[in-house]
Figure: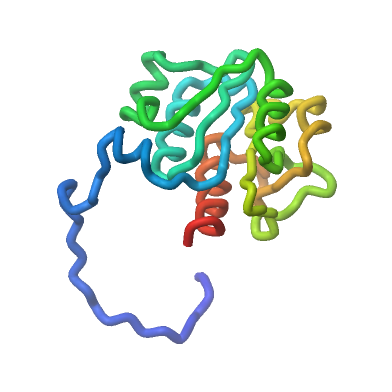
Length: 188
């Protein structure tokens, strides 16, 4: 099972870090800290839990902010707040009637806008462009994905390679993978 690497590991006793060892910032310190030039656009995300998860992930990776579009739940919201664990206070967010308006604003701010979707001509996640000006990533509805009209105004698309049968990830799980890759490229 798995590939053999030929690497031998010495046994190490692992010990979890204490919360006090994590170097957590205050909301004010976080607001003043440098941000990863990644803006998230959520289009008609049904589950408030998924929205809360995006807030938490955006905070973890220091993303610039989130646009909540259409019927996507907006803070304050009991389910968003439950999952976000306070990240709605640290991550800037904007509300829009639709994703087209959010995309127009992101483009005006200089972001390259990429739909996260299984689409012809999409970049594989490993080849995702990350220009210095930053990227705005559009994540769509849990069932229908990014709407066709929305995808048409994006500068391109990025797709997460998958090797199973379903070719489907939960939107917040997909977000975690894509946002980590963007963060890795911009910050590490």
